[in-house]
Length: 191
Image (tube, rainbow, N blue to C red; front, side):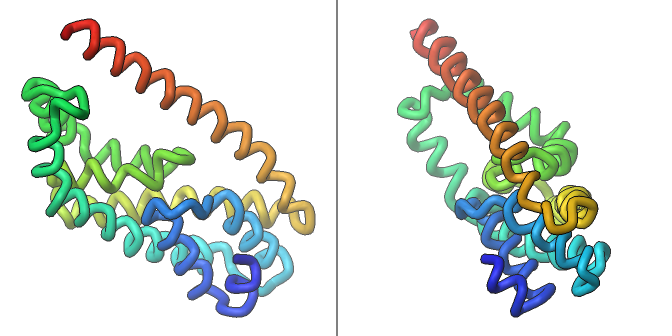
C-alpha cells in the first residue's frame, strides 16, 4: 500500500481510496496519514491528496451504490423475513432515506467503518445519483483532508494515529454490534 502511494503519487492515493470506499478492507486511516507524511516531506500537497482521495472515493462508492440500486431492493424484498424485516421496516427506511439520505451519506463519510458501507443503502433506497456523488465527494474530501492533515502534522510519527483510530474502530464496531443485537431482540420479541 505504501509502495503504491510512494511510486504512483496522487493516482495511488485515489486507487487506495477507491478500494477502501468499495468496502474492501483497506482502512483509509492507514494510508491517508502516510500521505500526510509525504505532504510533510514536500512530495504531495494537502489539497492534492484530498482531491485525489475524494475522487477515488466517488469511484469506489459508485460500485456499491449500483450494487444496491440494481440488486439490493429486490434482494431485501425477497428475503425480508430472513433479514428480520417486514414491510413496515422497509417503508420506514424509505422515508428515512427520502428525508435524510443526503445527510446520512455525508455524515457516514466522516465515520470509520460506516464510510465504507453507506453507499449500499443509498443505492437500495435510490438516493438521487447527482446528490449521492456530491455528498460522497464532499464528505470524503473532509475526511481525507483531516487524516492527511494529521499525518502532515505528525511528520515521521504519522503511524501514531493508527492506534487511536484502531480504538475508535473498536468502539464503533461495538456500537454496531449492540445496535444489531437490539434489532434482533426487537424483531424476535415481536414474533
